[in-house]
Image 1 (tube, helix red, strand yellow):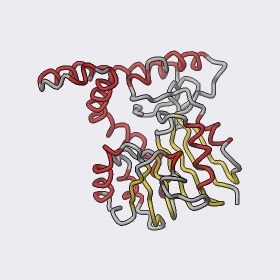
Image 2 (spheres, helix red, strand yellow):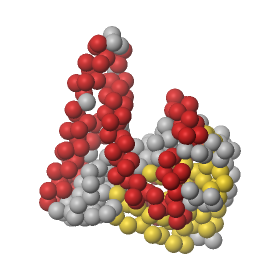
Image 3 (cartoon, rainbow, N blue to C red):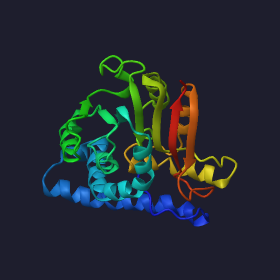
Image 4 (cartoon, rainbow, N blue to C red):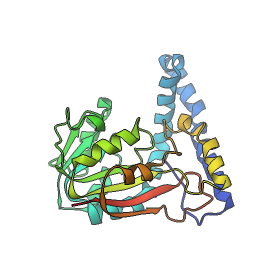
Length: 267
């Protein structure tokens, strides 16, 4: 999900999620007016459909800003660690694929884009071609938990897995993490850039994060900022090397912190 330019963590950082929530809230009225002006009344009869329309309008503006913010963190992961057969989990419409092209990593031989939302597949394929990945990118239209059965991905057949700001919003993330781990080859790497629960559980920020999270998922398409995703990754199996770190400048006053880095499966 989106962030602003990183600054050293200080008390004013506690207000950052309110700013981000206000950005999202701003798009409620334009979405409502657009639906009324086009006589597209169906989303007005369904809270979930209206949320989808609202978030799509908001994300069309703010999504690119969020991706550019994250790029300096994600790019080194791709340049230094991505290789071989690659699982791109939850790529959506392919908003991160331009980073693969920028990384210019010739060691990537195959990329499987695991995206269960078939409505995004056409744009995902088009963006893969646009990024120069048309020859190696293949879309798999199932959930990550179905890769071994419907997706045709065997155990120990994947060199690299990447999850970028997707485990915060997908259902049953702990289960999915455990089911993805066996797909990695011994020595394979998991590349991570994800929201996580704050480590400062004895401080005010932990209570503030839980309070913010009561409304955050409604404004950010189901994103849950209180998941201990880094802990679930560590518990998924045996790792030979773990190189996870907080987001740049993040500390005890950050309500939407990240974990960034790599985990290498034991050989």
